[in-house]
Image (cartoon, rainbow, N blue to C red):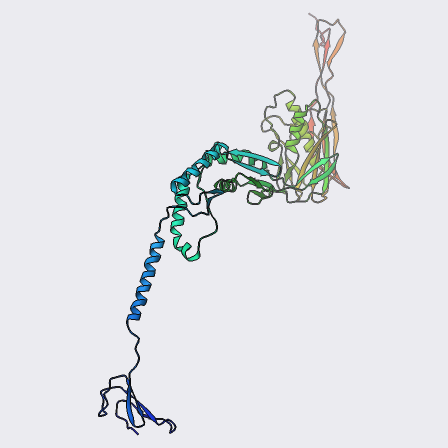
Length: 480
């Protein structure tokens, strides 16, 4: 058995393996045994035998490094490779340019470009509506050089990718198309403007005295940027097929709700009135309806006639009378309602033929207007219709608020004074009434709702003198 020679540790194997191993870690201390650091010795049957470690030669590593560098150089060469001829399966849209060099491909695309400029067009279809924009209208053409430059650059740059993944069966490249964007936008607006639609808010109207509700509808706004983007993409494809756009395409046709709505459900007609219009043509009657009907009065706010009708040019023939009749119809529709207070209302001074005294409202003088305050605590809406040459006004509300009738009580009659004038056409003792005149009186206006009676105001109407012509002065003559 060998001892520890301070070069390693000698381990004895089991008896059935009569051999020992020692690892030499330093200079040899065993006489007759040449040793190197890291050398393995085996003692077999009492004889020490040396076994050297097997080492891989350095030249194998050198081969691997050279192979790697060669691969890198090859791949670098592929990445910078520039093609001279297009692959066989190369297309621009549906135009085959495979197997051609730059000049040949340019000639083929230029030939197709001339055809496009003369016959190319964009066909647009929205449901049953059709519109055509020719390439000439928008100066559209194929940019041949830019298209080919892009294709050659992309194929050359993808040489490495094609080497690794293999070439594709067919390669379709996008064309570079030039066009006048301003002209395209103008043509698009000509066609698509018909689809713009204003929103319709909820509305109410009167038909033969009945309240009718019409639900609102969203408006449609054409997104012209989206339209131009869609048309531009169609141009780039060089497609001559019909560009179909659905009428409900949300990208093109944007729905939007009304900015303001009534916000209340009007269910009750709380008061109404009717005033004859006299000699009024159809256009004037429609003006009244457009201005008056649909006016909304919020709680605490005022209804003002000057905000609904044009109160200028009252000197025009018949204009003053028409406006006064409309003002009276509105006044008589609102005043029977509890909580309505007149802020600015002017009586006529003399009775008018279309209304009972005390119930008329006229627009005349400085700051002539009709203003009524809504103190009902409810939203009120004025609706109108014209039937049998009468302007009918209705006040509707979400709630059935208290309303009654107006009563005009005539009081304090005053006989008209007499005015005499002498006429040479009359003989002595003869008289002739030129003007009957009119008695004066006072009217007290009350609002009656159920058993409640409320005095609103009092109007005074001055008498109008009676004019009488006579053949002799009515004054007693004195003696000379």
